[in-house]
Image 1 (tube, rainbow, N blue to C red):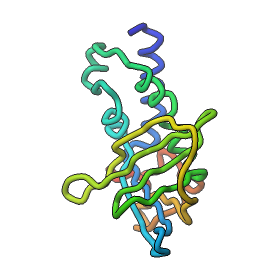
Image 2: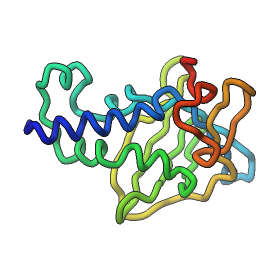
Image 3: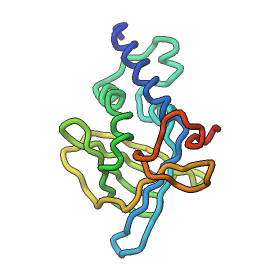
Length: 166
């Protein structure tokens, strides 16, 4: 990988540190008009779980990102910070797809329940169109009040009240 790419990756990872350790919740309406809420954590590990290489590979300088990796690296932060414009496709309990406008297309984030009732971002891809409805609330957990504040409107990067690690 060229030095420019390494520097760009480091800059994007630095950008992501602003949202490393936050918990997001999305409230919406199921097709049967019942309400639902899905919450999940966002962090640097979320990004590396989506890439074809690990954080350890980056530290060693032994990685070669493909076109999907480059798309994820270039758009992940902007995608998360554009959650106010998302639509949500409800599939099942703790299973949703989120569609967020990014650049001249949309990103589809797959949110799935995984082991031990943990919910995580398991997929990230560019798609031409969105599916679903606008959620009625997107929140970031405030550990001081133990409630959800509006995201991204009320979120202030660096304020410890928004991070699960303190």
